[in-house]
Image 1 (cartoon, helix red, strand yellow):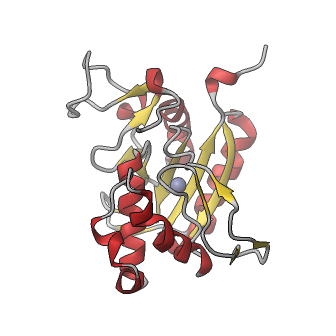
Image 2 (cartoon, rainbow, N blue to C red; image 1 turned 135 degrees about the vertical axis):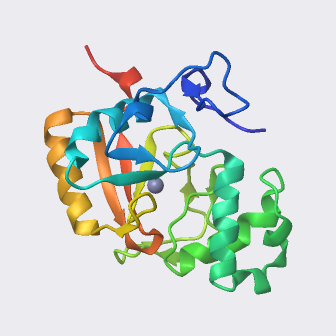
Length: 211
Ligand SMILES: [Zn+2]
């Protein structure tokens, strides 16, 4: 069964079959930080992408990933396993399904052992010992939760802007987001992901605003 922690917050873009009222997300009006293709959004990430638009007026960029389902997450794991030749040792990953945990657990765990820190499609215990890119060791059995993307609290900005054809500089993106984070108060954290060609951004959950 799929878990949707914030079902009520999930709204899809206009062209999505899941859209009910034709709601437009605010960030669809953005001029500089724009959406690539049909990315699924939540109110939480929409608010942040909308608020960031002006910060990108001199450095147009694209949001390349927003809300992900468990199925999307599994597809990412499958892609990474193919890229690293892991599917040869664990062919079950090729036809894996979210519900059949055995079909993806070990190949996913193998990714962790080579420094590919990717969340599982449902919370799962790492099947093998692994070392994080920062050098911290973790034992097999370590429980890893779902990604902030699946909770609708995170989005990625890509290094390649398809609209302008330009390659952006990761350090420059980090500087822009760092500055914006100081004034907006909507950003919980951010993480450069050079391997994925993206800057990952975690949003503060507006629902949890304190009073
Ligand atoms: Zn991300």
